[in-house]
Image (cartoon, rainbow, N blue to C red; front, side):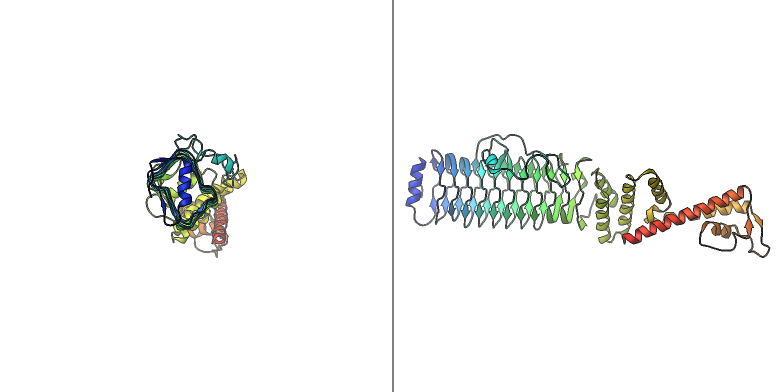
Length: 470
């Protein structure tokens, strides 16, 4: 039904009370004041396309079927504990006229990934005073349509939907908000689409989204985006997104995480204790050194392509200046699962080098020797090269300076076998006891014996480390 272009809220309520069956539809009507429908129950669809409310639309505690507010203009929409059996549509609506304040801050993060300042959630009474669209504790047994919605709040939050429940999907493609979006503890049965949305931050911690979170293809956030301790099925993608306020994904769980942004992010990227099966990114999306937190991040597979070889991935790890040995081991395990044993060994070599930075001086000296001689067991060819060098050098020396024979029945002189008998600790080729070097030759033989023991000790330590790792 269509009525006069302007009407007071009382006239609207009289029309609503008289309606009994079929959709209640008013198109292009202006309501001159706040329209309060709190606590009402509708057995029909409510359709107000293109309407204008010169005040707030209050839907607190409303129970109904579907509500279509396509193209609505209002100062605010408040729908605390709204209950709908199908869809809520706010497509192309314009709510509020504020210009926003500061974007959602990228606050200092503790070792658990939580912000230090302020509580984990935002008290409702503080947020609702600035939010122009409230859906706290609402339940929508259908889809929530927010495509091309414009929210103009004067405070930090534009949309406040703490503990929102939607059995279908949330579509916010093209959404524009001067403030941040609050979806903490939301439970979404479908997917959340925020492709191309422009907001001042998002708080979606402890949320459950079953069919994926699509914050991609031009999505822009000037404030921090938070998905702490959230569970998202299918994937979380920030492909072609612009993030200037930071990203906190601490303890996020999702099968696939995609972080190939349009531009290099300006804020910090927190992936502490996140759990993903497949991780996708590129070098152009990595933050500046010191702005990446990877501690505790687990993944089974890295995307193939440019920027995913082990040398680049080691540079990626070093962007987290506090990355521990566990971060290196996680990367090595990923390469080992993919069958790239060489990359896994080299990453573990880098892990040992990272560990020795915290050792005391004596342990650090021994660690450097193991690295130089044998690569901590991950570069066995280096030990062979050292052995060949010692044998060649020693053989050339003793070929020119043969020692005095002490056993007439000993083996014939062979400088190579003599040097091998000196270098290899457990060998007994009969040459060492058959010849007696003197003077500088004695010093050379002692150096070879000590070098052999040092090399053997390093090899045994390295082999033990590798076998224990395996």
